[in-house]
Length: 415
Image (cartoon, rainbow, N blue to C red; front, side):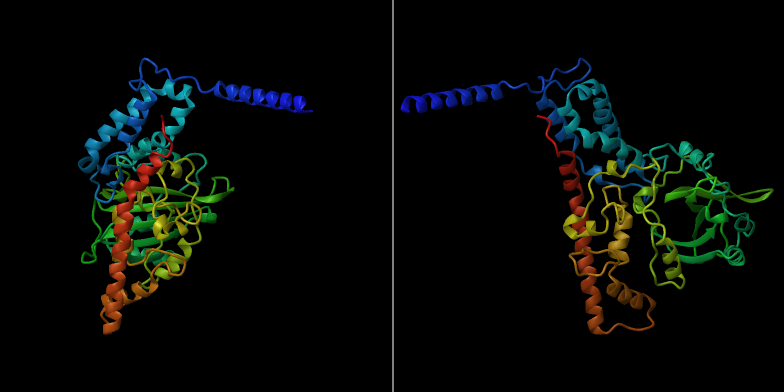
C-alpha cells in the first residue's frame, strides 16, 4: 500500500512538473520585429512614443470660439501631424502585424485625427471636409428645400423688425436671446412641409442697430426627420451651415463660405441646445428643442473618437453619458462651459440631490439682472455662495481635462 501510494505521489509530481514546463514553453506572441520604415524598433520605444504623444496642454485647447485655431494651435497641430499621425502611418505594417501595438495605440490613433479636424482653420471639424459635408446635405436622400432659408425671410431684409414680422406672418416663432458665443441672436423656428424637416435660423444682431447688414452671419441648423421619400428616420439628423447675408441687384440672398471655421460639435455634443428660460417665449422654444433627443450623426461625427467623458468626479456623467446627453470631452467649447457653469449658473456638480440646472441660483441672478425686485441680504449671500461654488466646479472640470485625457490615451501599455 505504501509503495503504491509513493508511486502515485511521484507520478503526480512528474505530471505537475511537465505541466509547468509546458506552460513555460507555451506559444506566445512572436517577438516584435520592426519594419524598415518604422523608427520605433522595440516595444520600449513604442511605450516612450505613446507617453510622449500624450504630453502637451494644447491637447485640451479649444479654438472654435474665437476662430483662432491657426494662431493658438498651429505649431502643435504641425507636431501632431508630423510626429504622431505620420509616424503611425509609417509604422502601419507593424500595427497590423502586432496586436499588442494595435491595442496600446488604439485611442491615440482615433483621437489625433479627430483633434486635427477640430482644430482646422477652414472647416467645421466633421469627418468630411466642408465641401463634401455640404454636398451630402442636398443629396438624393435629403428632402428638397431642407437647406434653403425661407424666401420670405430673405425678402424682408434688411430691417430686423421686418424679418421678425415676416416670421410671425408665416407662423414661425421668433425670439431674441443671448448667444452661446457672446452677443445676441434672433432665433427663428421654421416648420418644413410634411414634417420632413425643421429649420432653425440664428441671426447675429446688435440690439442697438435696427438693420442687418451684408456679410452678417446667419447660423442655420436643419433638423431632418425623414428621407426624401418620406421614410421616417430612427433619430433626427442635424445639418449645420453658417451662411452670410449678401445683396445683389436681384435682392438679398445668402452665401455659403466653404471655408467656414466654426466647430459645430464643440457646442452641440447633445445636438441642439436649449435656451435660458428668462426671455418670454423661451419655454416654448425649449419644449420644441427637447423633443429631438440625441441625433444620429450619420457618419459626420464618431463620438467615441473624441476622448473620455469628462466630469465623472463632479457628477457630470450622470447626464452627459453619451446616451441621455452627449459626452463632455476635451473638444467641448471652453467658452460654452464657462458660459453655462459661471455666467448662466445653469450647469453644476451633481451628487444625487441637487437640481441641474441650478434653478434657484438662476432665478436669483435673473432678479439681480432685471433689477425689478432687489435681493435681500440673505438672497445676495446665497447668490454669491452659488457663484463661488460654480467657479470651483468650473475650475475642477477644466483642471481635470488633461489628466483624464492622458489616462485614456495611456490605458494600455505597449511594453
